[in-house]
Structures are given as C-alpha cells and as structure tokens.
Image (tube, rainbow over all chains, first blue to last red; front, side, top):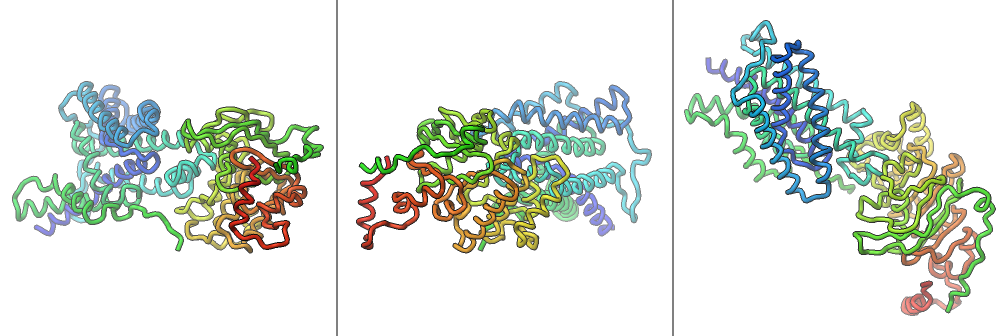
Amino acid sequence: MQSQLLLQLIVNGLIIGTLYGVVGMCFVLIYKASQVVNFAQGEFLLIGAWTCWWLLTAWNIPFFWGFLIAVCFMMVFGIVVQMVVLRPLIGEPIISVIMVTIGMSIFFQALMKWMFGTFAQPFPPIFSVDKVNILGLQVQTAYLMSTGVSLAIMAGFAWFFKYSRLGLAMRATAFSQQVAQSLGISVRQVFALSWGISAAVSAVAGVVVGIVNGVSSALSYFGIKVFPAVILGGLDSVFGAVVGGLIMGLLENLAQYFDSQYLKWGNLYEIVPFYALIIILMIKPYGLFGTRDIERV
Amino acid sequence: MAEAALKFEPPADPSAETAPPLLAVDNIEVVYNDVILVLRGLSLKVPKGQIVALLGSNGAGKSTTLKAISGLLRTEDGEITRGDVTFLGEKINGIEPDKIVRRGIFQVMEGRRIIADMTCLENLRLGAFTRRDNEVKSDIERVYEYFPRLRERTGLAGYLSGGEQQMLAIGRAIMSRPKLILMDEPSMGLSPLLVKEVFAIIKKLNEELGVTILLVEQNARVALSVADYGYIMEQGKIVLDGTADMLRSNEDVKEFYLGQGGGEERKSFKNLKSFKRRKRWL
C-alpha cells in the first residue's frame, strides 16, 4: 500500500516536474537572451490560462481553438511587453529591470483579479474520461496531456536551438550581443522573440495547470516555484531547467510522502523547494549545468 | 622638421577619379562616452576589388575606424560626431550594425570572437544569417575548400587552436557573401608560419571571390605584402598614405613599422626611443 503511494507520488512528481521544466525553460530563455530575471513569469501562466478560460466559457469556442488563440495571443503579448516595458530599460542597472518585472507581476496579478474575480474557476470538462489507469496508477487525463505537451515543447526547443536560423541567432546573442550584431543579427528582434516564445509556452503550461486545478491567482505561484528549479539547473542552461524541474517535482512529492508518513508537519510540500534553493546556493551557486566560460588550454 | 620628407604626391589612382570608391570615409570624428575623442578628422578610400591596409601603432585608432564603419561603435558607447561614411554612394553612419551587415559590410573582429559554445558548422551557418537563399550548403563546402582542416573539427569552436579560430572567423565572413570585409588584426596571437598562411588566404579570397578588404594590422610587413594601398595612422589621423610599394620603400615606414633602420650602427633601445620622439609625425 505504501509502496503504491510512493510510486504514485513519484509519477506525480515527474509529471509536475516536466511542467516545472517547461516553465523553467521559458524563464531561462528570457534570461539567456536578454539577461532579464523575469519575476512576472508566473503571471504569463495566469494570463494565458484566463484568456483560454474566457474564450472557452464566454464564447463557447472548442477547446483546441481556444487554446491555440490563447497561445498566439500570449506570443503577441510577450513581444508587446518586451517592446513597451523592457526595451526602454536596455542599458539600465539590473536592479531597475528586476524591480520592473516585479512591478509587472503585481500589476497583472491585480488586473486579472479585477477582470475575472478572486475565485478559482474550473475549466469546462475537456476530456470524456477524467482519469486513466496506467499500470495500476491513477493518472489524470489532463496530466497525461500535460506530459505529452511538455515533452513536445522540449523536443521543439531542442530542435529550435540546434537547427533553426533564429535559434542559432538567439544563442549567438546570449554569447555576446556585440558578436551577434557583427553577424547581422538584430538584437532587438531577438529580445522580442524570446519574450514572445517564453510567454506563449508559459501560456500552454498555464492552461494545463488550470485544467487540473482550476484557474485562479494561485497559478502565478508556479512562477515562484520554478525559481528553485532554474537555480538548481543553472540560470543559463535550458537543459538544466528541465533537469532542475524534474528534480524539484520529485522532491516536492517525496517531501509530501515523508511528511504524511512520518513527520506530520503538514506543509513540507510547499517549502521544500525553497530549502533546496538555499542549500544549492550555498554549495553550487552556478547550478548543475550553469555554464562556465570555455577556456582553451 | 621631418615633415617635408613625408609629403607625398597624391596617389595616382586612376579608378579613384572615374568611379566613386566602394567605401569612402570622409573626415570623421569619433567620440567615446561623449568625452574621449579618438578619431580626429580621418579620411580614407577603399576602391572596389582592392586590399587596403590600415597600419599604425597601439591606440592609434585603427580598430575604432573599423567599428565606425561597421557601426559596432554603438555597442561600445562610441559615436561619429562629424563626417560621413559612404558605402556604395549611400551614407551609412548612424545605421544599426545589423543593417550595415545586410548592406554588405562584414567585420571580422579583433580576437576572432567566434562563438565558443557552438560547433564550427553552427558558427559558419550563423555567418550566413542575413541570407535567405538556399546556397548556404554549397558556400559551407567552399569555406571547407579554403580551410580543409575546419572540416574535421566537429567539436566546440572554443577548443579550436588560435589559427583555426582565425580561419573560422574568416570563413564566417565568407558565408555572409559581403562586398567588403573589415579585418581587424588577423595576425594577432598567431605563429609566423600561420600568419603567412592566413595572409595567403586573404590574398586568395580577394583574387578569387573579388571581395574588397580593408585590413587593420600591427604587422606592417605582412600587411603591405598583400595590400594594394596603405594608410598609416597616428593618434586618430591618417599621417601617410600611398600604394603598398611606395610605403614599403619609404624611409620612415621602414624605420618605424618594418624595423629596417637605415643607419649602419646598431641602435640601442634608448637611442631609438629618443629618435622616435623627435620624429613623431604629429
């Protein structure tokens, strides 16, 4: 019975971990391309989820189209945010930029509460079966979809950065903006694109989490949760974000297991990632995969 | 003082009168951070199809000149405050660097600046970023023909040797199919043998692909061996110019840049220094 519970928690951990990984990648994408630590990442999830929810409930659009429109909207939204809010800040001290993203986070949080209320709203039922049984484990259909979507996004990212022209341009920009410009890459466009992709992919994650838990401000908490995952993986490593996400997902769920079985403290689940964050920063401040400069020997 | 000896007749360059040069820098003044004046009225011309060398000592403003042309000056807080840079008859100062690349000027920056955490092939593909045609593959083959040893390097570019990195940087320039390549110190940190090899390739590129090259160098001897025309800079100004042959045979150039003192006696370092101070061009 207990090993059954442990297994279930590990599966849950991996599922939620891939989601952390995806949001972490979005976070890293922005950081790598434009050196901005985006504290409003969670709000991207929130806005995306609310947009999709609104399209589905107010306009009765089929899920697939509502989802697609929401993602496209968020892409544009990300680009506009970059152009309007962050472009004028290029060259300003990093602390100002961070304050602005925190400000954006508070602003959008409040805006969403004002527009859609403070209560969690469930998505209309999307799947005919709520849960599926895989090898004796109950897995929510939404989670199954989330894992599928997450893996697809990760594969997409891998392809994008390895083979596409714009992906290479983004890596070049991350390496050195001056070098990128000397190659004919418009750094401004790369910045805008990175915010656009990041917001769109965050929206996907937002909708998936919204389907499982309902849409509410709590969604934006996801953006904070992702922070330890990204630090663990290394702030500038896309691959590290995925590994960090998986580890954090597992850690959370294992913490819940130990808590419920032995400790009975009640909310270890919530705080364990942040304890982990403190320990990582003490032992390995650059994270597992944070790049050190390549030096030729 | 010695200035009379330096007055050259204006170069007899027939193409300069008939057709406008590919690139013309006209009396530019460059200021960094709004206060530091680096170039003070610099003018030069690069005719189509030639290799032009820009020589001078450390801090003369050679790299700044190249960055002023390519627009990369902006990324270092520099600005052209006076004068014009004209490329193909159009004024290009004040344009964003990435747009200047699209117009056909590609700068190979000092110290190679290849992207260390990418492979050789990815670096080459990035060189073709501004192009949208489907001949990129055949161009990569062409770069491999010029630099056969790059073909075997499949690892990260950061682990290449200095010479290979320089070759990759030049290959990246070829990939963008530029009309004009600005080369900043291609000999930096290379062994004399490699310097020879790199300059032979530069000459070959100019002859076979017809690409015009503006070359900045400390190593005047090797630069003048491939160049058609040369300019010598000191403290932000051109102090001397002429065809490569003329410069090579000029006594002062021999003295200061080619290390072939005219005197019979071996000069001590101390004498040389005071002599140099007396004979500054400015």
